[in-house]
Length: 171
Image 1 (cartoon, rainbow, N blue to C red):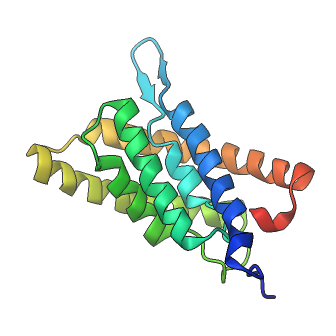
Image 2 (image 1 turned 180 degrees about the vertical axis):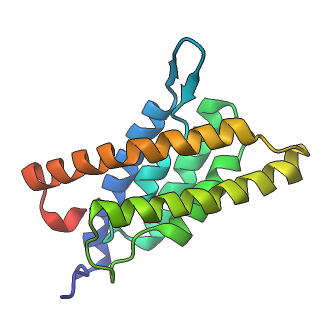
């Protein structure tokens, strides 16, 4: 089954949709959940949007949007400029679902997402050691566990929206 669009301009709405979803996750990711002794950061929530970026999206426009969203996250979260942009480009370039892949079920995608988080933990730890001369293990690990726990709920919501409102090709 060939799922490619007839022209490049047909793929632009898919990239804009992926950017809108990721932007929404960036806004949600700015929230922190505080308990009695534990504070959970949702700062890695946008990684779900990057991992599930629409398969039909225009590659060139997607890279520009992903980079811009990373810079936006850097500005609103107070990180050094380019940190999230580099991480976003890494995740998007290496782990985004390809158009040639068939639709995968939740357990397979969740396993791939968790493997991506493991690789990202190593990359971020090395980046922190290089830039900051120290590793921020507890915060980074807690963000990874939190986003891994939220992934199935977000994927289920995405599937419900897809079945209810959107043509299957956009996702």
